[in-house]
Every structure is written in C-alpha cells, then in structure tokens.
Length: 93
Image (cartoon, rainbow, N blue to C red):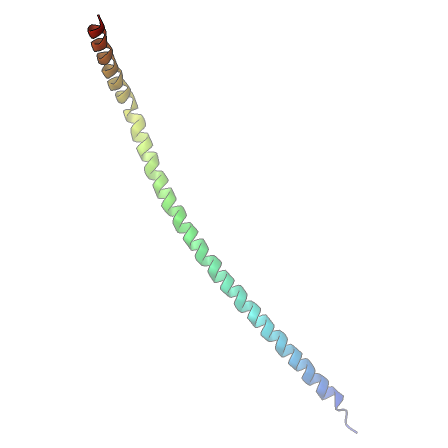
C-alpha cells in the first residue's frame, strides 16, 4: 500500500512556502516604496539646504559690506548729530 501522507504533507509544505514567499515579496515591495519615499524626502531636504546655504552666503556678504561701511556711517552720523546740536545750541541761546 503506497504512503499517501507524504505527498499531501509536501503539498501543504509547498503551499506554506508559497504563502511565505508572497508575504516576503509584499514586504520587499513595502520596504522599496518606503525607501523611494525617504529618498525623495532626502532630495527635497538637500535642495532646501542648498537654498539656505546660498541665502546664508548672501547674508554673509551683505554683513561684510555693512561692516566695511560702518565706520563711514558712524562718522556721518556723528557729523549730523553735531550739526543738529549746534543748531539747537544757537536757537536756545
């Protein structure tokens, strides 16, 4: 009498392996989609970072220029203040 339990158990094992393979493929697809999403987010963040670095470079150059002009502006402000004080001193006396 042939043993029919072995082929049946092999069929069950094959079916289980097939389901496990399908689950793994679904997980791979999910992880791949997650990776693509994260990669897009990273690209966007890098773009914003480059934009901010460019803007910071501009601000740095403007700050440097303002520092170069600060002594001249201080002298002009001092002259203007002395003139205003001179006028108010003549008007009040």
